[in-house]
Image (cartoon, rainbow, N blue to C red; front, side, top):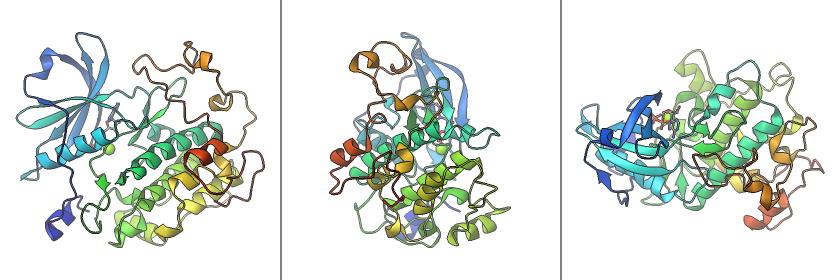
Length: 358
Ligand code: ADP
Ligand code: MG
């Protein structure tokens, strides 16, 4: 599956070109010390690095300018432009600086010290649902804010949702805007992109891409967090694609033995073939699953903080690496969401359970 096939087919790249961030050409090793590798993809390697003057940790994403013998600098600049456009989105990783070498453009990104939520998707002991709902709420907040600016991520998956800290479990940060696009720039967006087990049916069918495509991914991520399994992964690519296009999902007792009915209802509403039938990110925020009260004491987001607690260095306080308070959304009630997102109807409350309808 080619990530960029559409570009040569119709001449429309949909890439953003304007950036404000200065791209430094002096050697970055006079400013930063590289201390290890955090991850890698097809065209990028991400390294942990420390700013020598301050001791502050960043993630340096080295993006190759030439890929498959083609000059891809414009695609790297596009990724920077999308990150810049999302600067005020607290759920998106912040772009701090950029450097250019002969082969790479290096993005100095806010460091997400807690790793990928993927690590909580394929382990024997899934996270308690109260933690999962907090992470999904935060993901939806980030996605909602992106969609408000007509940006679609198109590569949401557990490897691209990071955590600010691991213990206590921090806040989410969305990364990897290489496939993100601005909707409505030129004509319709129909592209073949993404990783087989996470792509939405409309992508496989070469149908128009909309914000609903990201909501499919939120359904896949939610499924993976609650069950520890990937809903569409087959034994090979063909089987995976078939599972996706037939929306062949296992909701059996076996997979969902320890999962609440509301969680199943939430996932079922997102993993639907017709994009228009999926709820928007704002609609999702009113689903009672996300506001369910959990009985066990360790669930962090339930207790609202007073303003004093928010800045007092408790476990709610921001991590030292990022002075911003990132819990501000997560503590809101669904009623507050209704107001913020200007819903016309009252959303279900966390306690009435509702029938799971959006
Ligand atoms: P690619 O486009 O190659 O998939 P990503 O931006 O997704 O590149 O980065 C690859 C991996 O590097 C991520 O899945 C994650 O594990 C790690 N990573 C990326 N950005 C950060 C960050 N800001 N902080 C910590 N780790 C990161
Ligand atoms: Mg990635």
